[in-house]
Image 1: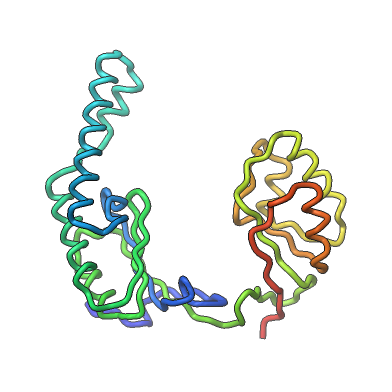
Image 2: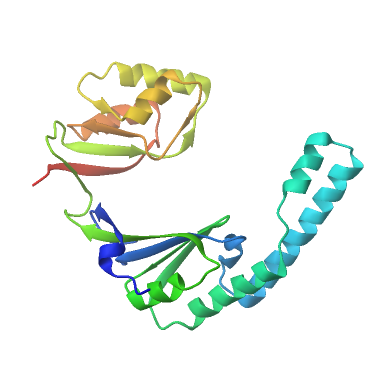
Length: 234
């Protein structure tokens, strides 16, 4: 079935995907990460290594008479010849297409970004791609901005994923809790009272002065990955 833009989930953004692509098809596929270098030769090398490693790991678990290990070994999914065939089939489409695209893979997840609906439809016809979903980037604001209905701050700053010591977290949380003019994201609020020390890249703080980031850097440097201007929604 030919995909039309009406069948895509609209994602409002300040820029296209990777500042370049309107559409993305996302899917699951066994061993999708073996496509990272997108080469038929690399697929075969990667799959052979994975098969060897899994066989060695299974033998170790069985020799060790480790109940948990044996259960994990039995549950580890075999890489079938059909899986390898499907990987090569997808790679062949992407290697020979005239469409501009970007492939992003992680474990068994894949995403193909493109401006060409013909490529999206070609991939949509592949039965071995499972749990397919489709998104369409719709730019509704200037770059590096966040839209809020009733903004109360001028800037939103996002954290980096950073591992802190317990002492560093204590100093940071003490500083943040003593800043009445800033707003912490809900996830950051939960992290402050939780047991974990690692900050996540979806944590953010809304604030009014860029100079506030200088004060934060004195408490713990290198925490902020980007700052965006907050603008009112139209």
